[in-house]
Image (tube, rainbow, N blue to C red):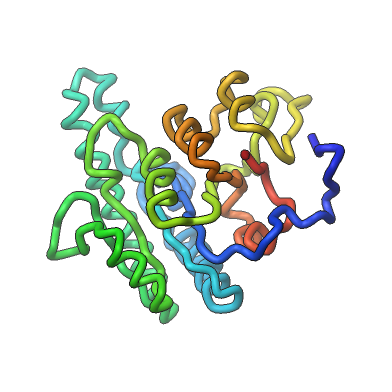
Length: 251
């Protein structure tokens, strides 16, 4: 659904983007089975991030999920203590963060992993000022460990960190061929239509599964736009950063 006031050729953002948060689900990094790590997916995502960092000069913060290894809600659903299950999920995000760091540094992109759960042997603790300083030095910053507390998703972490680090937009990378927000599940309803742009309140009232409701409400309250797009389609990340109408803009 394209808004009447905009066309596909109209730049999506009024100003050049200088700093963004990319939210990557664990499944985007997974093998086709949805589990483990795909070296091909890691290499592709890393190559695009390096290109965007070097050629567009955008500060890039990445918040990684851990669903390719473990989901806290799954453990809680089988009777596990919810807090314990969520802490396990936070550890899974650290594994993904380290894997992505390795892929980036193989391409000579300086990268730092910061974790909300302190584990000094493998990652720095998350410190906002230090993270910003890394960005100013041209490094990519990967944030793992969620926000360090159970009962919150990595979607909410992405929203919180984006506000803290004064990012201009959150890029919510999807996978499995889903290229935005639809009026219904496009895999089940062939008549489902994709939104070019949608308001935060409409996402909430229509019950659209974009990010969890806490993250959506936080972004709405803090005027922080989100672009939902297929991160695994080559060139999409750069196109979004250049203001092209890829995926769905939520604002």
